[in-house]
Length: 286
Image (cartoon, rainbow, N blue to C red; front, side, top):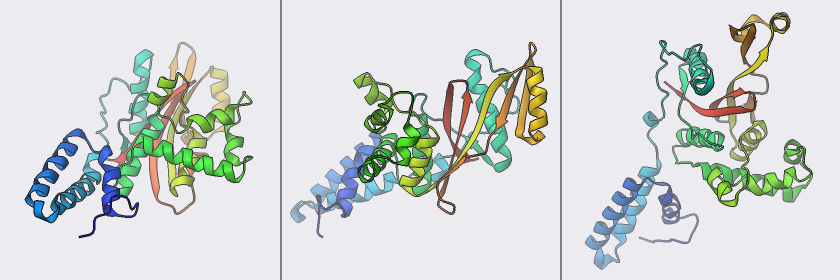
């Protein structure tokens, strides 16, 4: 049996690259069994250990689909109408799940920081590809894509999309898009968060389609609410909560919610926006 740890196309090289992504218990099992197999085949240069290591890493890197299912919708949830203070996130989670329920889908957990978009993409890609994908993998893929695009054409569509109030917004984007939130904290800089531009880049970089299910809010008075009702179809206004002469409108905005080329493999994520804040979630079948 030929073993190659340095050939990037070899099974051994792939196993070494995937090993750090395993859980601690998976690493322990893999190393223990590999050592035992290596000792058992000592006079064959321990080739059995290499084979076991390669096989176990490959097996653990494939995540069972049943691990990626959305929790059930709790119809008795106290968060149906309570969105004040800390309950706001639960309020949106409930209504996102309610909207996805007829599709047999729902949202699941994503990290609660600036990596939530990348975590949502990583989880859905893991399920779609049956290969473990991490937040760092997704950010690295995005960084590689935009750097290559920049080398080919400094004035490109990403630069146009990343243009902000600062002249160096694009340069900051190039420097930080590949950094996780923890890495940005170490450098004392603000991370790049997920948005429509990042979704488009991810879709292009991975050759996939991304559907974003979204809910958002804005405060309106009753005159504005009546005007909105005349401008929009009834089914576009998802829910209205009236409180103290102010209406909070939850709306479903599917315009520009699809990213990537039609016909490409599809992943789905969800998000809510409440003023300047928001959160992304992976979308799975129930």
